[in-house]
Image 1 (spheres, rainbow, N blue to C red):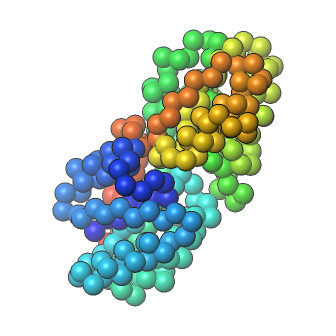
Image 2 (image 1 turned 90 degrees about the horizontal axis):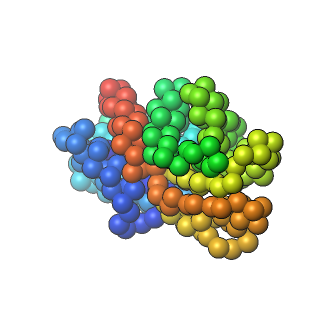
Length: 244
């Protein structure tokens, strides 16, 4: 059984559904279930308990988190509490765990946004951010963009650094950007994307940029829609499967 951990929207979600379809294609012998963890892992515990009652013996939980942050640590603790129910229960790695993940994500993100790279548009990839040391992954992602030669690509986060203000300071030095494309560094285009990135309230990323004089275009779609991102999650599940 392969469980997909999701802290985004419940119900129909095209960003998550395409990942699930990719997982089912890659592992047709596995049962795929979705669980929305939200602010805690209570739903995950219930799902694991039900799986054990149904006779499931091995479980892989693939979170859709980007980083090894606090949420991922909570997930691991939940699995530790429930591991007595199964022969083996494992967690797949978050999206941006290895250098190869970073490079693949950079190529996918640029492929999706390259048509906007006209020399006057900053391509800004906006993540949530975390107060844990895992936040450094965003800086490594920025380094990967630079190493790939994508000079107009910038990574920013809503919490911690690199902040949107810091990214804007870089654009001001270049004095060539008139527009900003915002693209979310999140598996699903949920509340953070619709409100905190593309919303009309004063503290949204869109509003901050528009007050600074930029034209703003928001692509409100999750990373899950990108085939290369789906491939990374599938690869991480495959790694976990090899440990069963």
